[in-house]
Amino acid sequence: MIFDYPEKPLERKHGPAGYAGYQSYKPWLRDDFHFRCVYCLQRESWSNSGDRAFVIDHFLPQADNENLICDYDNLCYACSTCNAHKSDRHLEVDPCRRSFSKYLKVEANGEITAHNTAGQKLIEILQLNDEVKAEFREKLLDLYQRAKAKGDKTLLKRWFGYPSNLPNLARLRPPRNIKREGLDHCFYQHRRKGSLPDVY
Image (tube, rainbow, N blue to C red):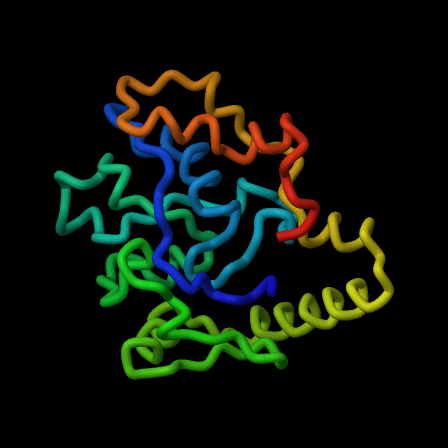
């Protein structure tokens, strides 16, 4: 389902390192985080600005952890709205260590509910039930169900497929890459091989 939080913690398949500025990690993060916000599940393809509406979030805030500013394992991919709400706050739940599905669930009406107090804190800090976002999620869920019922593959792919501008990570040359095997499993390579699903 398009708004199901992953049942397992996000596992990074890439390991670039050594960039002087953290913005250089964005293509890698786009691929690792499936081109969507790790917090609210907003996708690049749902924004008129595409990936320009998304930013790099420091899970442990920069202000308190200067040594982690360019540490790939501390970087997450987030929409600009969630990033602004999070700001310099510290979240109890790291999506790369614990599955968000144990804390949050998106309901049919677009509202996000919490399974526990940690999930409720995530909702409050990130303002996940902002009225505009919740209404947009409800509309997308309705669109998905209608398109699926009609078997409209074109509509499904347009709204729920991968973005057209997948990064070709093999062309990038980070100073170091501790997970070079991840290059063979990036979404660009899957599209090139014809193994990229139309909908995800």
